Structures are given as structure tokens and as C-alpha cells.
Length: 189
Image (cartoon, rainbow, N blue to C red):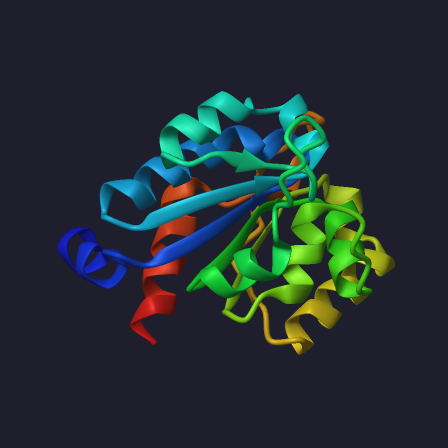
């Protein structure tokens, strides 16, 4: 059990959580709760499709901070500075990492706040893939996983289990506790 050690390792750490549009996004609120509980400062950014699976108010209340999904707030004109976000963080966690977002970051696409912040990040990055079995085994996904690993990113999961499609196999996003433990280990290194 990491309990006290995790608390000491993560207290005061700045963790940026990027949420993408996959069903596994429902697990992210628990991850945020675990991080905040040990004293980490958490900020959340999300792709617009992430809100199909988890609400902005839930992520905001649990993190204690506003949640951004666009680079510009059209109502206020406020710019959500991806460079500032990427430099603020001690660690950037992208969970779930869908096949779509994986392809974008592996190939340098930056068409949303999560992917553009990824390109601006000046900290270690932890990716938590989540997709269906056939997607996980597709040659394009295998190639993109290789690319993000070669770029120095850390991965946690995926795990084997029941998938949203009803199939059983690899592709299930790691549980929040497993991602939390991986974060604690990264701060231990």
C-alpha cells in the first residue's frame, strides 16, 4: 500500500489531467479524487467529446479548478494558454487515451487543447490507453504506441477485461488506483 509514501511523493505536485472522449472517461473523477486526497494540485483539460462521458462540473468540483476544453473562451475572450499549462505541470496524464488521440499525439497533430498542450508539455507524460480489442491490435495503433514510447512517454495499461463492446480482452483502461500507483512511482524515480 502506497498510502503515506504516495502522500509524501505527491503532496504539492502539479498534475495536469487530459481527458479524451472515450467511455473510460467515467473513471477519471476517481483518479482526480485520489490525487487531490494526497495533496496534489490538479488541473483538468478535456477534448469536447470527453463531455459525452463525464461532465465538466464533476471534473471541476473534484479538482477544485475550472476545466478547459477550448483554447479560447468565446464568451469572455479568455485564452487558455496551452504553453502555460504544459509548463505548469510536474506531470501530464492523458486518460483515457483513445485511438484517435493516440494517433494525433503520435503524429504531432494539435487540433484540440489536449493535443496542443501535449506538444507544449515540459514535463513527463503518462498515457492510459483505452480502446476496443480490435483497435488495440490494429497495426496503426501498434505503430502509434511505438512512436509515443520512443518519444519518452510512460504508459499504464491497458488491462485485460470486459470492454464496452461486450468483448473480453486487452484494451480496458487501467483502474484509477493503478494509474495513481503509477503516478506515485514516477515521482519516486
